[in-house]
Image (cartoon, rainbow, N blue to C red; front, side, top):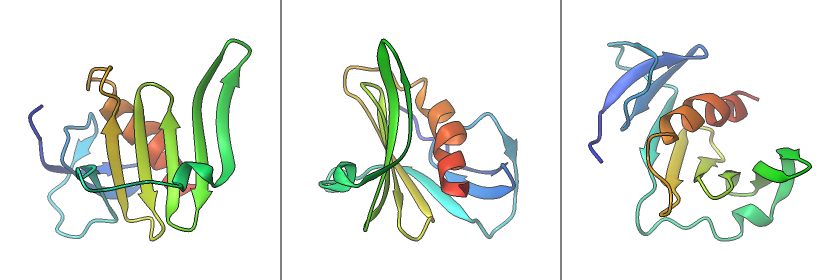
Length: 119
């Protein structure tokens, strides 16, 4: 996977991202939030045990769940990708599921991930 660093304006936020996003590129120095791949030593242990603040479930499938804990928010796109938003609402760290491709990650991060941050 090739990192495509860039700054973007999305939903009114200025985002620095290590992945290419299909959004308006900007040249501003100041950013509101960072999007980056989770570090190998980063752990969200217990974050998924927090209070469910939002979820999308249909009769035949659980699509995603967002939980809040003291450390921040964990957005789990079941079997696809996890996105952790820190308690300062300044960093979104994503971790694609090993069994899935990376192609959907930018869409999940820039759509539902940033919507949760704004909410």
